Image (cartoon, rainbow, N blue to C red; front, top):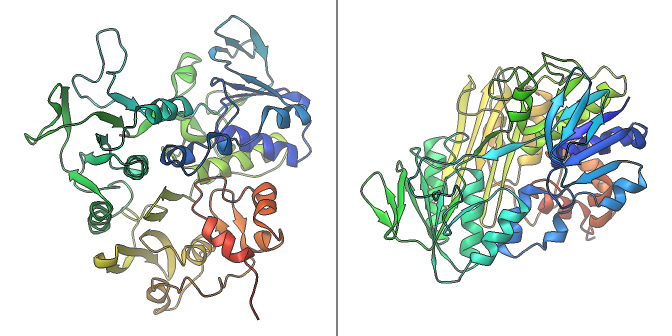
Length: 457
């Protein structure tokens, strides 16, 4: 089959890797990426802004890699329409490319909050306003950073906290505005959000929750509580929404995202699939890397004639930001069960497990992720725990102790890599290349390094 993938993000690259790993003929695969640069890791954009990573380090696979495997990679190729009758996609320049199976991996687009003054009359953003979604956005914001000046980040979700920490590291006086009652309101409980806010303030970032930005003018960014924040930069990090315009024009069913079944096929057209941020499975869109990569693995198996199916139950999110550690498994705010919590706001720690029938069905950990590998393994396997075990799991582990994990324990949630697979690599560089561990959110890097550290005798 001729497979055409629309999108050059992390889900698209993972799909190609999974297809090749199963022996699929790379010459039958075409990737249409609308950005002019090789596919890269968006999760680490804040690390580039912070200055800890070079932009070149974000490249997932180079154009040479695609060429070596026979895969056609078209950069700067924007798809205008999908002709499902002819099974062709049409690019903006009029070129048509045929397919037998089409995979939409179009990701998400930034949400523009309803703030007056953000957009000028010609439709462009105000010079002080920056989005933060692409490598180009990152470059523009990087050029605008001036140590000592003020910045306001609109949005207190995962992305907003990453950007805020990066700006503080660059020497800017930074504030975060979040309309919800607490930070990470979609992922963690109010008490955990308060711990995060306290930690951010200690790290030099003021936080305003329960307040919405309403207007940008010469005096600064006005909030609906009457305050005005003087600012030289405004960064929009209020989330995104699935990019579904192409699918809508093609007549595919779209709700929050492109509606797909357990084979990741559109419920409208079985020859069209969707994965990643743009896909909606059981009325749910993920927005995170691990589910997108899981979808890519399932779809690769399906396209190669396998019987894999996606159930959408597994969801893991990690926050990658200097001085902030957050991991969320499942939906700890809405999943039914008994709640086990351990909190110490003085050290910036709040850990919550939701247990049903002795099994961990959701979790949210803030400030101490020393046991996240074991907790993730128990969550994935549905292991039945004794009455005292959930509480014991929430006790911190000494960071200088050997990392005791069974070979089957998952270390990298993004790539689904186990401790045994990491140990078998022998070195960090080999583990990164062979397993793709640390190439997602980067949160597993300490665990990978500890697993590969020489054992003293």
